[in-house]
Image: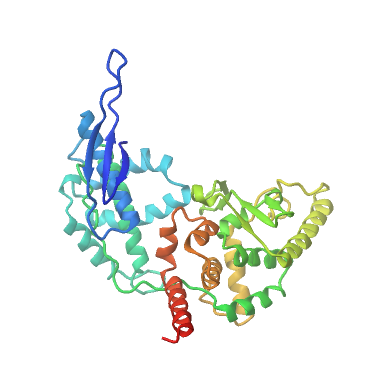
Amino acid sequence: MASIRKRGGSYLLVVSMGYDYKGNRIKPKQKTVHPPEGLTPKQKEKWLNEQAVLFERECKGLPQEVDRSITLAKYTELWLQTIAPGKLAKSTLARERQDIDRFLPVLGNLKLIELRPEHFRQLYADLRKVKNQRTGKPLSECTVEGVHACLCGILSDAMEGGFLDHNPAWRTYRYAGKKKEKLIADKATAQRLIAALEEESLKYEAYFKLIIATGMRRGECCGLQWGDVNWQERSIHIQRNVVKVTGEDIIVKETKTVAGDRYVYFSLEMESLLKEFQRECAWEAETYDNRKLEDTDYIFRRHGYRLPMTPTTFTWRFKLILKKHGLPTALNVHSLRHTNASLLIAGGADVATVAGLLGHSQPSTTLDIYTHAFDKNKKAASQVLQEGLEI
């Protein structure tokens, strides 16, 4: 794909044209583009990538020997068979299939080249009126947004494959209503939760306290091995993620993003708890497996196996703990990650630091997710300044 270089408010697309028969480099082709105003960093990145693909195709005269009369349903079938398996994780693909089932009955019979922005806008409007079969309530806005993201991804691949000249779903979705703040436990609730965890087994106490203390994802916590812990530096190297898709074997894979491979740090109190749990695990390995505990053993492993526990086991247990101790049942395990981030922000941590600890690829992702928390921090800082200056 063409390289993208920032030039002030514009971007320069550069396509390498290779070498001639004498071995001399052919002058690269260049084009300056200006992204539309009002795009988020993610939208701008997607727009630039699409422009780069189109420009490279234009420069190199890439063959267009594809069936441009193909329908969305037929292309989606092709995409599921040839592109998605090598591009998406099994858990992501399972979610994409749910989104596909929502848009194919409406748009599947249309040819790709017939798709227009109004088709997508009408689809999203209609989806907002659909009732969730389990709850009886309208589909969440998050679900509608997911359908849009799925469509954009499929049509971007269609464009890259020469089936389309542009992505017709581009910028057709607008979030309806106000975005809800992330569900978090405030400081008082977090203290009550920590006290409640101390009445549970060492395994569950260590697992949930680790997420509160470090903000790691639940699958990342399941993927930890004892060798990932550096006792001297009181750090943990997060480098795996555990995923379980219904009907499939448990999967241990790399972290969600490159930035997800990171180090997080823990306190003296957490060190004491982890060492106590390690002694318990060593005793179990010796007593039941007749072996020594090894660095490659998962910290949270299934009894009698060298496999990690599944994230859903902890999701189920967490709900039981909340109910047992009279804590807000609307909280979930991922709420603990949000709680960690909010406490970091309230403590004055800058966005780059929070992004690094959470494993976000870009600080803009952290800003998008925790806008409310940063706004509260800015408001508090501004108030301190004004009071100090008696303004």
